[in-house]
Image 1 (cartoon, rainbow, N blue to C red):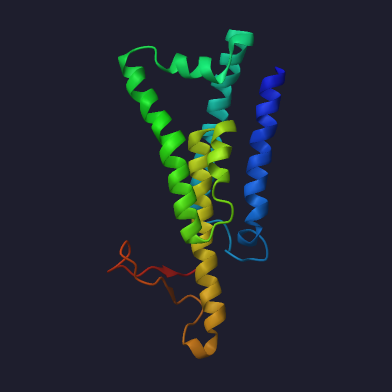
Image 2: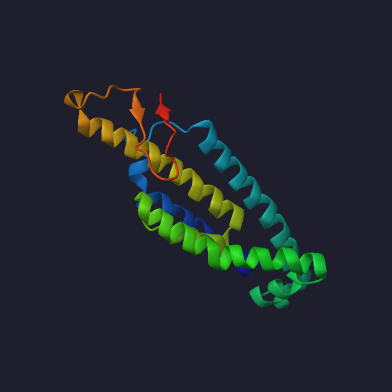
Length: 180
């Protein structure tokens, strides 16, 4: 293991822990309930991506030694026309769309420090960061629903297990019921 791998590994752990710490209300005291199947799938595929990505990154660093840099890594992505196509997609998603999406959508949803998912992607993997962002969104939605029920109380007419999401342009015509 090289010093750079350890350094980036530590930064990956720190950014991930930071995301959990600043959003701890979603994970403690039953605020969002237990992990759902969908949320569990996000965690599973995020961790699978992390493991696979780090396997290849370790091999890259050991193969290129001191020449293993972000610039060298990015240049290596563009090795043929097919790779060029995938590489430009990856770069656009990771460096432009992911930060725009997580920061804007995360703020709208009430996720604290949503920018951390972009920073996290620089030290973990794009798929890991996206998967964990989606898992946090799932928890935030459930947290918001439970909070609405709690605030409405018995006078609000809502009973536990009869929580409906308000209609938004994206959900208009659909009613979701949380029975967890």
